[in-house]
Length: 237
Image (cartoon, rainbow, N blue to C red; front, side, top):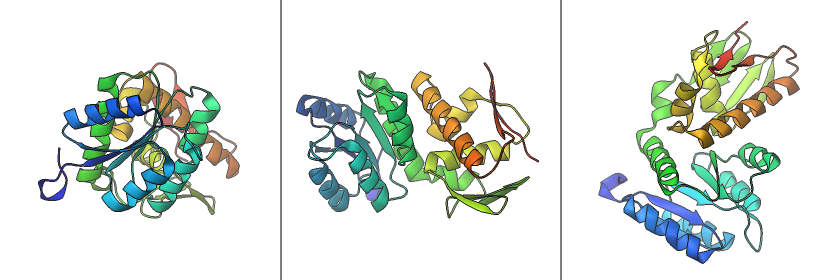
């Protein structure tokens, strides 16, 4: 898998455990990608600016400032860089916070090697193919919802809400299939590029965050419904 001119896509890897960093580098190299390893946030930002990675994989427990700060800074510098959080923190609050701050995916240590590589490759493919932009119109209007993919905003009853990249892709897919129960597997495949237990957990948290944002916009009737054992349904109206 390569970028422009046959160059291998670069993956920024950030973890202060040097043994794990070496393992991550080996896995990425075996997948045909170029690893960019950093054990601290300062080095990570320097590599980001100089080497332009296609994907970032970062831990949350870093020094001198933690991974949340690095996540926020990376997202401030790039709205489109796919960011995968790889961490031992399994608390619900940490997942919600990381995804709220713009992480695209959340993988808990210990992790399956093939699982992580599949996620990285899926993110590289999406970045190279521009998949989201190709398959959905830039503006979608369903009922009281108006979604602008370019501005990454949702308008509901005249109020403008900012969305993260994953919230945007999830809502795009649900709006394109409004009033229909969309199977969980199909949603996970479209938004994250794979369907497994961790992806479904991130889907659950992302749907929760979307519902919360809609509620803050004054929406008292739930628009996004979970159909247990089946999937999600967006009610338009």
